[in-house]
Amino acid sequence: MWGKIYLGFLTVSAVLICFFSYYAFSWLNSIGSPQAAFDGYAYHSAIAEFVLWSSTLGLIALANGVLWTTGRVWAMWTTFFYFLIFKLGGTLWLGNALSAFAADAGGQRVGVVSSLIVGVVLTALIGAILYFDQFIVTKMRQRTLGGDDTLKIAGEIAEMKLEKPAEKDQQAS
Image (cartoon, rainbow, N blue to C red; front, side, top):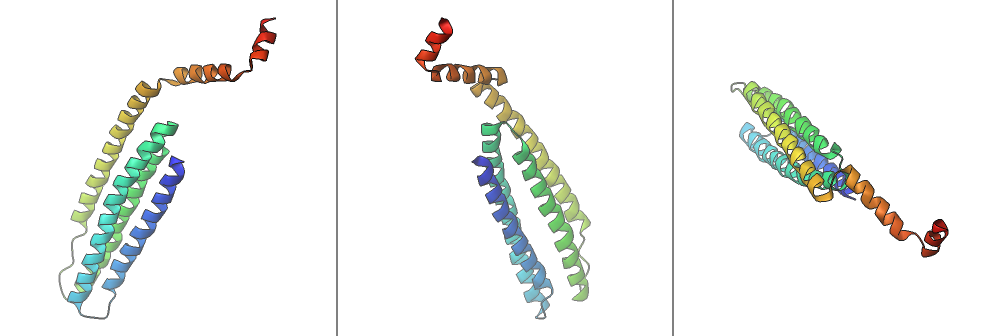
């Protein structure tokens, strides 16, 4: 169940980021005044950035649920790649588009390198956070639910309780 909720949230988040990123990009191709185009770009790219950060936090919470219930880490690293793709991709794509827009409007080209370095550092930070979060949740899960041997023994005990009393009597004879 956690996996399906996670995938649904991931899909909705990706669609929202793509929409607002493309809408911000489309403002740079506007035929109106350059100031209005830049204001529209700034507004919608800020929304895309907010959606990226808030959805990443939501995906981390859901990935913790997936890890806790299944013991699998796929959702954690999917969240990392989600952030990587949209942060660095958005920085390169929208940054280059803004730089070209500024040059066409008669201004100076905007430096993309500094924002790319910030994006790489933030992506590495998110990766480190996810790694330690995975470590903490895995250790807490082992302490709470026990190791794999404990879970196997608990499953065998549950199966023994489900056996019918008549089967136990036949096995004893």
